[in-house]
Image (cartoon, rainbow, N blue to C red; front, top):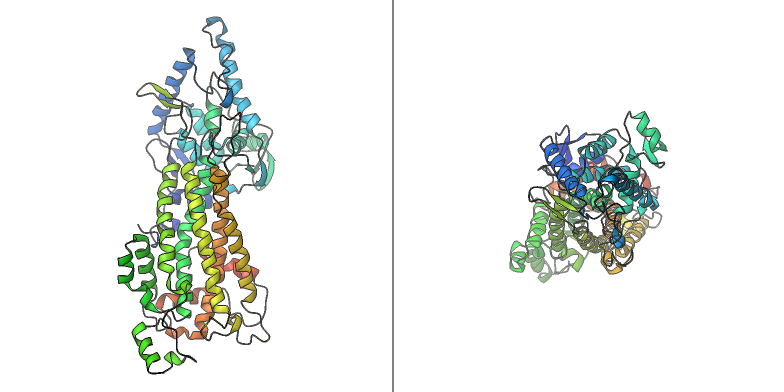
Length: 543
């Protein structure tokens, strides 16, 4: 399924009554978006129950034998060498031994619930909780079944933990953000949102008729030791970007059409010779978009017109036989973006469905692995890669706006795209807004990996910074959507000046939808609400 085909991807096409997790079930970006948008229940598949219980039983066999197992009868991180005081096999201290293990789990949650920064949106928290339960529900974590079902009861009741943005460095996963969620589920004196109010978790649990979860064995570590937070952020932003990519290319195609683009640069032969599949796909999309358009120039006719000193399509002067780079290089420029987006979708969906905690319990082969699946490098790499592509696209959109707004490059479009530029400012302020958004996206494009900082006694001497990359990625996608809305408004207005009857069928459809929500800019007026309205059209996939 190509990312340039939207019908099969849209959550409007999903008819799910519930989302199944755990066992052999598979989650997608659509599932994440569906949970974020609707109050749909999340359930652990029945087939996972026995697997989870077997994993728990096998782990506790090792615990009972007093085997040293990380994070259960050892301390955490750099202090793994500090062993459980009751680790020596003394049958007289069994109760003390297990009480100490269980206290270590709740203390881990309490101590790590210390995040700061801005509040994380509820949609991200909901998806994060689903992904954490899905990881544990695959039966390789050694947790109690009650731990997973308790997390799902909390999620399905509509209680949303208060989580802050700063805390995760993407090594040992998202310890601090996930601990803030676990603190709520275990009934600590922390805040949640419930029934449109902010209240203590204990109060919300009581109102919802739930019981707080009391962690045992390795429940606490399993709840916070994974990539679910960074994957939750990224999955929603990536869903939006996949949907937005087609809409952005549509806006670009319309802007090129309004600028009398020369079709020669988009001939299929050109891009087949270049060999890159992403470039070929983007080029095919543009050519299909321009079908029936009489505003796209034919190079051979243009050569004849210039040779004969005729004016082409009533332009005031002959058209150049070669366009600016921003007009003729879209396929080459956005082909890598297309391929990186496809690759990132694969990586993030794999991460969503991964077992990403530590230790990993393989009860079938009777092995307990101390490993590093909680590292978020695939998420960081995907986000850093796409942030760079988004920065390039943001700069490109600003260049297209500059072409349309300014008479030096607009091929006789009116200055600022208004009938009377001597009195009206038109799209000049919107170009300034676009510059502001593009500059921010260029700043966000810095690779988070270059800022890696060893910490925690140098146990976490390398780290992925996946949550940082994911939060920056989310912001850059939002900004790209805002830029696309601006470019759509400008392109529709420019095409109206050219004559809508000459435009492509696709342009006519988009112009009609947009004009039902935003009239032409002729007189100066505040535009914030209208821009938000266009963004809403994009979000609802109406364009």
